[in-house]
Length: 335
Image 1 (cartoon, rainbow, N blue to C red):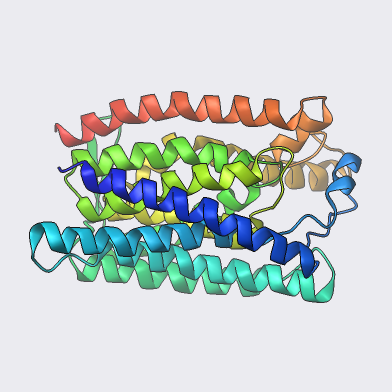
Image 2 (image 1 turned 90 degrees about the vertical axis):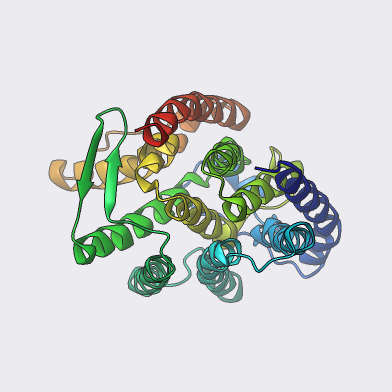
């Protein structure tokens, strides 16, 4: 595969995200569109009250611009019609971003931390997931064969069951990604190596469209981290975290390797499991807590870890998981 386009895609996304941030953040500050901090969270987070939110708009704009430029570049290089996969992935992630934007807007407009209700979010997420899986099947990208990494085992599922499990899987992962957003730069720094992984995976599979989106995401996240790393000048909000969740699922399903998310995105899984375990333990024991606070990054934070240390450790673990995922990836493509 020609690596020029992924490099171009990452570069354009980085520049656009960085430049747009210089305009967007002052506007958000001027309009006083800031995050309201939960009273039940770590007390020192109260100092972040009023920090501009909806920062996910920065990398969404950067990725959008990059996809457009890269798609035009493909047309010039190949002079042929292209697969709509890059645009499909972006629109799929954008749909989740819109759900997050509505949620963020309600929070800001109502001056409270809770936005859409859980049933409203769930319904919208399931609808978006079902639409995307159905479209991927329609264009022949998906197969109901699930390869289990390292087990050398392929399981063929009936399409109805595969679709149902996929929709539930996507919705679960997107919310897991959302839970990972809690301290400055955490979700951005964890998702960055994952996007690098998917860029290489797309190259291995010669999927130019997917490589464009994942490379653009890599560049955009680097640009966003300039503003989001501790101390954050802007938060991504649900606008950004739900978009990134959709993006991770979108590229994985477009490459037909959704199971790999369980390895490369294990931090996401641990984050949401910590919430499930905490709530369950609280109910079973009549009020006792297993963790100091959930999601688990707050457990470490309340144990004395700095936000920078949490980002460093969690992204370092993800880097190791990326290496393991590469081994799993090549085992998939060599069978």
